[in-house]
Image 1 (spheres, protein in one colour):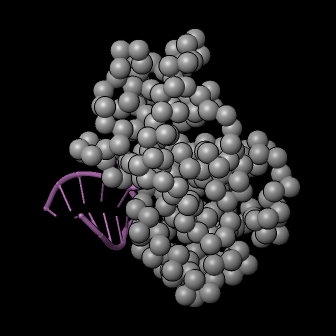
Image 2: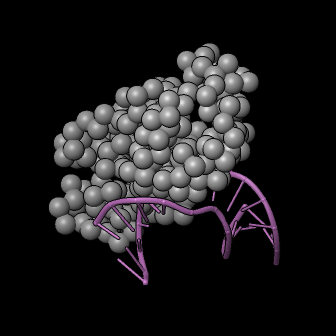
Length: 231
DNA sequence: GACCAGGCACATC
DNA sequence: GATGTGCATGGT
């Protein structure tokens, strides 16, 4: 780990002026991760609606806890917009309790569900009628949906070529000297947009691979032994 | 018992 | 606009 001399962690401007080393590095990381892990088959979820619900539930939360919450919703046969809309925030909160922050997440889910019902009659498939930029803005206007959640829905539920930036993505890319740690969400996203062609399958796979290497090696306290990105 | 996990909104300065 | 804080469960 550590910054190669040619990749000072200044990133965006450097990447614009001299994109080739960044392209090589960003594509190189993908190649190493894909060779190591193979296809990740993301997002874990049976439907676009389940993916959107999971994207909200997983905010700052371990996925295994989210699975418990989704299992509760399935067990009660309420994992669809109409059913969840009929529930009170308190009822919903109890079902999603294992996912943590259950009171705020119940409100956030309801805000998303209201949007989905009002704009698309509760049908995720109808979101595909809306262009990506407009839909992203609309999602961001929902209370509880920030950039990562909106982009996760766009990429994994709707198949739009949008790169998702999360804590793992930031950690991996900054530790490899490709971006300043404190850079904004948009700056991280721009790095990927400048270095790889927009492709839904590739963006899906790349982000999933970053989460895998993040979970296995790129923790707040790095555990670099055995990491496929170790130099 | 401490740390960590696939954020976000809001208050305050 | 930057920074701090509340929100909470469950695995390691």
